[in-house]
Amino acid sequence: MKTTLSTQNAAAFASPLLAVFAADTNTATGKDAKPQPRLFTANDALTKAAATVLASGEFKAGLGETVLIHAPAGLKAERLLIVGLGKAADVSIHELRKAAGTAVRFAKPRGIREVAIEFPKTELPAAPSAQAMVEGIHVADFDPDTYRSDRKDQSVQTVTLLCTDSAEIKRGHDEGTILAAGELFARTLVNEPGNVLFPLELGRRAKAELEPLGIKTEVFSTEKLHELKMGSFWAVAKGSENPPALIVMTYEPKNPTSKDVIGLVGKGITFDTGGISIKPADGMEKMKYDMAGAAAMIGAMRAIAELKPGVKVISVVCSAENMPDGKAYKPGDVVTAMSGKTIEIINTDAEGRLVLADGLHYAKQLGCTHLINAATLTGACVVALGMLNAGVFSNDDATYEKFNKGLETSGEHFWRLPCTAEYRDLIKSQIADIMNTGGSRWGGAITAAMFLKEFVGDTPWIHLDIAGVAWMEETKPWIAKGPSGIAVRSIVEWVKSY
Image (cartoon, rainbow, N blue to C red; front, side, top):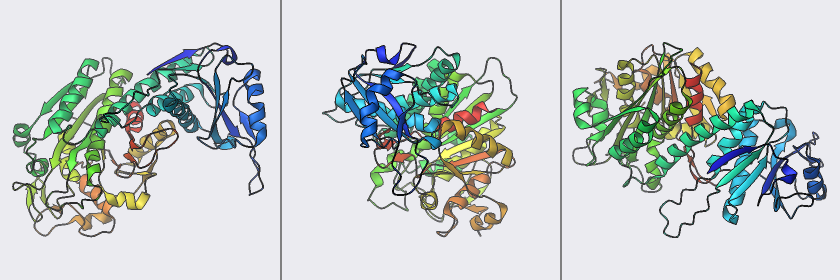
């Protein structure tokens, strides 16, 4: 898809579909409060063309709600699509992102390949608004039907933003395009089945995507794990016929403005059976998504390559399959991590934290001064937060605040959970330094975070548990069911803050 900017008057712009946003301006509440939809436009011709529909009461301007007008009077567009933003008082750049995506997804199944969207007249800042809209446009064009034999190409080819001649809008457009490309690459990786995307293939695709953009990408396997004494990572990997992949991606700024080195560490379990502690069959097919944390890091590195922040970034992805082979690790085993810390295996389905343990320590060895990891780590986090928020943990308040500030732009939902010292006792082991689970149902997301905390020491660190939000369980007006691409935008905003 290509997005372009045009300063042409929306009424005079010839397009198969012109979209304009509307919000409910009624501030009253209660069952008798009638919606009062109003277009976010200063264009009199658009207002006049939509007047009858808006006055009818049929369209309430709910978020993602649409109404279509064929052959709108006074406009050159063949169709006028009105997209709801929800309550006017609540409109933020994130509603603009969703509304722009809704316009694209409305067009796709109707065979409309060219769309125009009028840039809404609001009090919101221009650059973030444009960035959010472009992200929404590109994200909406993705569908997960890659391997369907009857697959039809329904992609929207061109979206034109009708706007003023503004450097801020241009900057937002360009940055949004870059971030969306990273997010879409992550979603494409997560969508691949486990028999296609095994660990070394993940490394190959990362290298093919990133090296042309200037990211040094190295892909190592079994010998390197043994050389580095990554006993925790190897324990998970050794049960599979497919060898593991240690993927190291490095971005070096030409003109650094910071002495910090940011480390991005991703869990890359390309398929998770649970190992000897095997998962139930029901829903196991979705476990191809267990590398969504790795995909987020690779997608973020793709965006970083083009945004060119002034800080060095190193990403470490630890990728393996967790299989119940005769060579697989077992409950009761004791393994030694790269750091020298010994781990008693309580449950082989708590494998993500084992690969991350060595990945985090290795990132420190490579010189990273600040760390962030992402992983579909625990079902317990889904129990705690549902499928609306991801969990975020940190050992440093200032580092967390930088991440939290970036959510204002990224629009992704994270909720901070504790990982304070009193939880440490829950992972104590009698035979080794620590256990790989807390040994009970209680506080499972927290005990997983406490495990990871053991391997970062005093290095400022953020842990993202994205298990509940990495896969969209249902289609929304602005995004398809399937991989969500969560965390790419938030990770990039956090890196930019340095």
